[in-house]
Length: 238
View 1: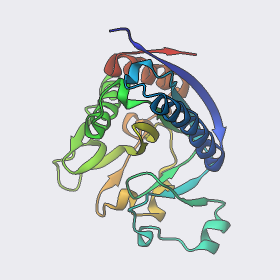
View 2: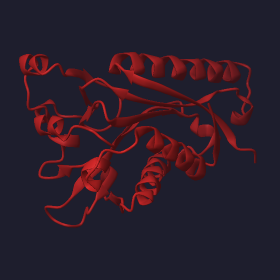
View 3: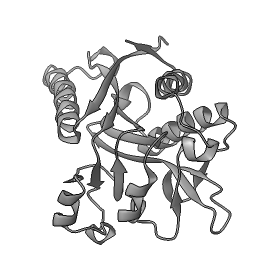
View 4: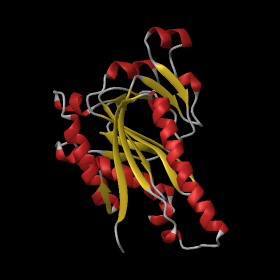
């Protein structure tokens, strides 16, 4: 079977709302193609000309709360958020509260899973595998933690557990949006204002914190693209 083609864009530093609206637009375009195919009684998902996208970006400081998240995990009130120039959004992704900001690589795959596998659990595990592969390049051993989507360091060492990549997605008729946030050179102070991912008593970390020096963001983006190609067996263009 031929590899699926994925269109890549690096959006640079962009507001969270603008990136969300772009994702919604790309998802809607694919949904319209699926609707047209269904109306034409076309049943083969591989014959529907949906387009896969992989968007990378960094965001201005923002806290986002997933649809099942608990607002009490935000430890600042509205005026305190404004004083710190941090935005806040309730989103339609899974997961709880997280932070996005400069120095963090946020990735938004808009994939038609009918051309991969219609198993959201497999999809999430594959994103985790991408992160684990990239971390290994830096001599860092990433792990999954049972019942806690994302990638962790030392998840089985009490008091040492720390999350380096948060993952939260939405899927509509097997078209995905939202995605992952990998801490590279992220300012860790922002996480002290929330209960990250709604998990108390566990830490958050970054590549730069683990390695003791800032890392080359463009190099990490290149490594992520390569790992996506390997894990998802895709051909990334752009």
